[in-house]
Length: 436
Ligand code: ATP
Ligand code: MG
Image 1 (cartoon, rainbow, N blue to C red):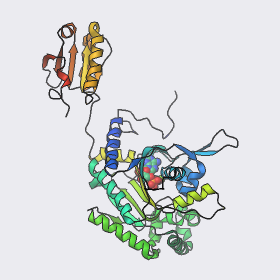
Image 2 (image 1 turned 180 degrees about the horizontal axis):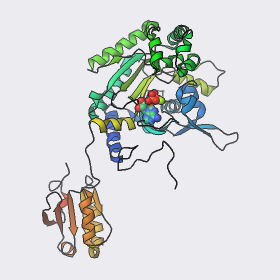
Image 3 (image 1 turned 120 degrees about the vertical axis):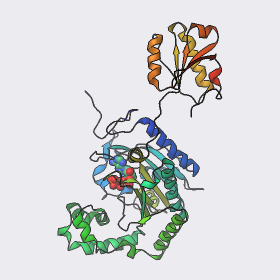
Image 4 (image 1 turned 135 degrees about the vertical axis):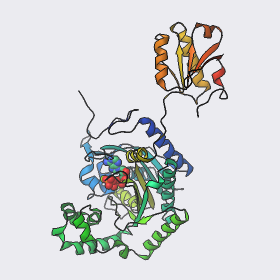
């Protein structure tokens, strides 16, 4: 039997070991899109495959994603082009913004939602195909842009009823020069202690030393307790920017913790970085993460021009991405979505008048787009009634010869079992029947 590929899950209407019901996905997506609309952000729909070098350049060669998590292939062109299933959305969004010159005029505030792909060990809250909602806000270097995105995520948590279960952690990574001075100080401090670090951190000491701050190893963390602090390396501009972000958050009533070890796994960030974390999902604690990336556009424009030219002009930007599977798991754990059936009105039609039943269902769907109207196949009345019982519908409409002859419908209220006869236009009026 052919099965799905490891880490690539079906999303069904029934919950499975690895996925929440599709109706919950739709409710989540609807709630999130509604907040994005209220902030005036615009949707962008990006390709799922991009050239491999886009991700390598944007995300950074020494990151977990590029080092070991990408699904990469070559296409059939001659010579073959290396291509990759997108592991995240920022690189593609920035590529699109440059390609279509979207930074002319009013810089865009964009969002996208869809599957991302990373070759990781599947476990609860971690899959090889997973889904993110991402937001990328271009054009402002000012800290209010940072606060706006955080305020937006906070409103999403409020609307989902999970704001009490999420903690906001923020940090500032400063500018590239500040960070590289810090990187040197950290490497100097750790070099003679290298033998006591965990294996990953030993490797990172030469490839990506800041990521050592992320290490889960307790011995490494003990060594880090006396390490130099990134915050001591921030210049006045970075410090002021970070202070301003905090002021805005305070004014908006959004609590935060400063986590001086928050560095994020991707190379393109500068200044503000943030994560929303929960203690309800075990090791998969981060549901949303983001930060500022003022240098990325310049970096990718330079890539387009060819590396011989001088660096292209950049443009400020900030973004975040949230993991939808983790959000659904968190919602399930603390504030489950109301159960909904797929049907409000079930129409049962005697096989002899089944065509009239079909016509009635079609016009009811047109007159009442607010209702979900289901019908079953033209089997016996009894077997259709059984399906109606199981459907979860509030009302069953029964149509037999008498009803059709008299232009009437028999209506069974499924909760009470009570049955009445009404003119066939009765259901067209919201006043007679509506779903709460
Ligand atoms: P983690 O530390 O958990 O691996 P990350 O830093 O790699 O996360 P980001 O690249 O910042 O994650 O992606 C943003 C969000 O996307 C994460 O906070 C998480 O909610 C979600 N996410 C990332 N990788 C996966 C995955 N393999 N499966 C499910 N969700 C994921
Ligand atoms: Mg990861």
